[in-house]
Length: 119
Image 1 (cartoon, one colour):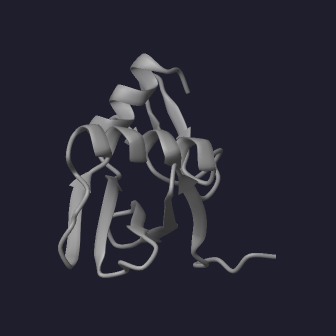
Image 2 (cartoon, rainbow, N blue to C red; image 1 turned 90 degrees about the horizontal axis):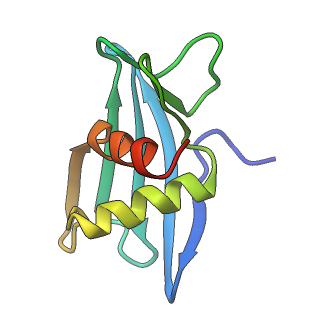
Image 3 (cartoon, rainbow, N blue to C red; image 1 turned 90 degrees about the vertical axis):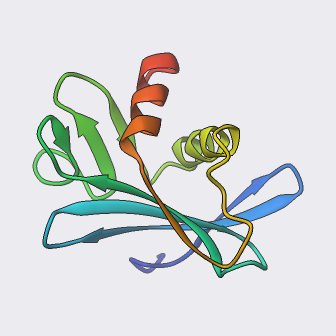
């Protein structure tokens, strides 16, 4: 059984990505942190904050699920969802190449994925 904060592995072409989910309070924020294997200090953190019309935790959803009240749902535990987010972050040039954490609002990516590719 995987630990709650264990790194997960995703291979895209020849690049190995490591990722994990987290949820913090106050503010009820879910985040997805990604970095290339071998470059742990250059990290992308997609942040999903609980705000009007946006849901990040609580009944009936499970850990790692985010949704919009007016439609759309993603389970950030699913490698396929993480891959789609990574692909979109790559298209939008959001991936960091230098050390440090680049924090980005995940809701615009959520909107793009749930609008164009279904949920």
